[in-house]
Image (cartoon, rainbow, N blue to C red; front, top):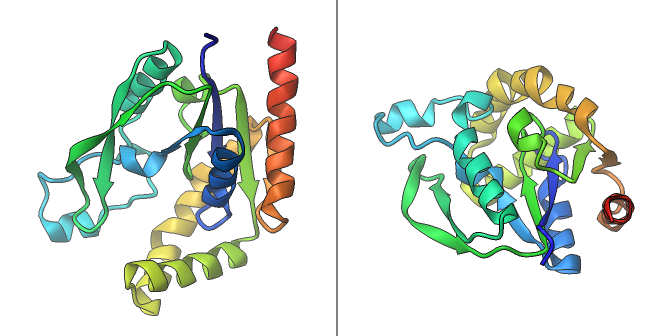
Length: 205
């Protein structure tokens, strides 16, 4: 059985990464890895300190564990993937059993940031979208799904999300094999990703 093919999908918050990953999962039966589950456990901090942490800083992610887990799946080994509780900013006590599948998708704002993880990707994808549209999407999502106030979303976006995006996320565009727009129909983006996967796979074989 050939080793799993790994796709990395990065880009700004609100650009449409998760929507693209979910469509690819539906089309090709891939396993979806959200980078959010690899946030470092902050249980040693007070709840106030956890809530005030900068979750857009690359240092907040457990890159070593992510590399270890993805590498294990590539070798054909099952893993137990961590799960993150955003209400407490800690890792959940249970984990998700994940079996190797032909395609693995690693998705998150900084999916293309860490070189040891990035070199595991057969296809690196960057989803781009104007900042004002990303903010509008994040505002609507956080109010609807996370019970946030408009003021708190704006404060976090201007103080950490946008500056960290400019510093760390946008530069990863240069590592992408495929660049798609989060403003176009997601089916078009998925087609572009699958085309690159087919091309890369045929050249390998």
